[in-house]
Length: 150
Ligand SMILES: [Zn+2]
Image (cartoon, rainbow, N blue to C red):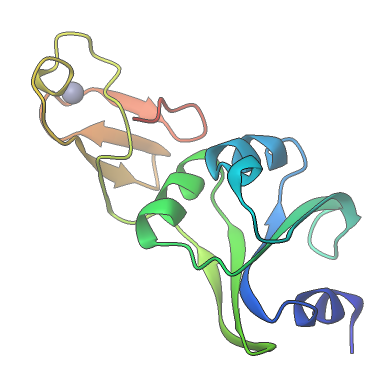
C-alpha cells in the first residue's frame, strides 16, 4: 500500500482534496472556512508528489462537499483530486473539474452589469480552451485563476 493510500484510509467518513498546488492551499482553507469546523481537519503542505514536485492535501472528517463548493474550488485551482470516504473505504475518487456553467459562484467584474445592480444570481459560461469564464448577462470575461468569487 502506498503512503498516500494510508493517509486516506485514516479517515472513517469524510473527504480528501489532493494534488493542491502549494501556493493555493491556504486560499482553499479560507474558502472552505475550515477554521470553523469542529470535526478533525488535517492540512498538509509541501508533500512529495509523483505528478509535480510538491503538493498540498486537505482531509476533513464528517464533511461531504457539495457540487457548489467544489465548483468554487475549481475556479481557484482546477485539476485537483477528490476522494470521498465512507466507513474507511474510498467510495468515490474523481478530478475536481470546472462545470460548464457556474451559477452564483463568480462575481461579475463589470460594475454596470445587471448582476451587480439587482439582487440576482450570476451565471457564467466556462471556456476551458480559452481559460476564461464569461458573464451570461454582459459578456465580460475573467481569466480562470484570477476570478472574483461571489
Ligand atoms: Zn456581467
